[in-house]
Length: 305
Ligand SMILES: NC(=O)c1ccc[n+]([C@@H]2O[C@H](COP(=O)([O-])OP(=O)(O)OC[C@H]3O[C@@H](n4cnc5c(N)ncnc54)[C@H](O)[C@@H]3O)[C@@H](O)[C@H]2O)c1
Image (cartoon, rainbow, N blue to C red; front, side, top):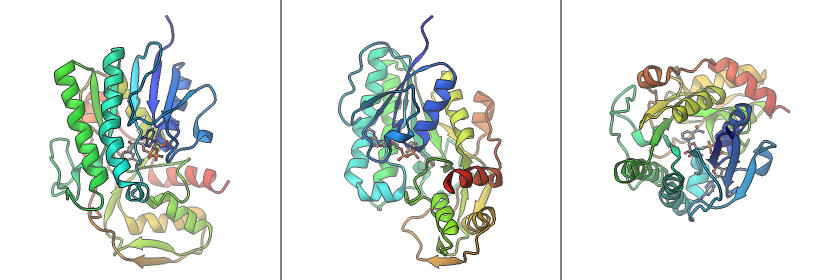
């Protein structure tokens, strides 16, 4: 039997490159489709076939495809606020083309959605049945609504074309290969702590996040790929911590003398975030294993060089 052939869109990004690593370890043939808008070639492991392409255009790939993992999309607020129209195009047209590739090849496809579809949630923790509380015209809407549209498109492809498509809603994930300046909380804190600069905490810092280490997330994503479940399924770490707490732990693991500086709150920043992962536990037998402290230490080892 020939090895499984997997297309990873966004395979040059943070999550996508770790997915490529895991697939190679499993013996799959991996094709990374990426425009390198926020990712880089150095992230892509040796042995992966790289196709430089923008998913907002039709994806024409020769040969069989068994599985499509659709991760291409700017994910850091700093990135999607810098390219709002492009983010909507990627979440919309890009998801359409990834689904259409799976339709033509008869492949399973898993679409990466996000906890941001829940917006600033009124239900806590968030279950998959919660419809969300999203500001459709706020600055973050380009990402949130693109992902909501992508979910609707996925459901429509399943209904109309019988595509074996599934949705995962990924909660904040961190780890090696996040860019030091990508604007997300953990790389920002670690960069600031290692440089001895003040750690910038938005607002009072009592807003909460649930942070999943990348290895755990990839395991969950691949479990979803191997299932035939339509989702959406939450993937994230239910251990809820305040932003202030993450800042203190970042100082601790880096052995830094940095202080904390409170800066202006971000517009539409969610107050609370915690996944209910009962569904992932039940249908995928998945749950995260890496505690925050341990994940931060692994990340720091890479970050500090
Ligand atoms: N990391 C997280 O905490 C998190 C949380 C929720 C959801 N997600 C989702 O997971 C996926 C990956 O996120 P990430 O953190 O690795 O982000 P990332 O920015 O590191 O990676 C995204 C990748 O997609 C590529 N890309 C962007 N637009 C493209 C386009 N139009 N055509 C082709 N390639 C394109 C980028 O070049 C990059 O390599 C995204 O879909 C994101 O929405 C991530």
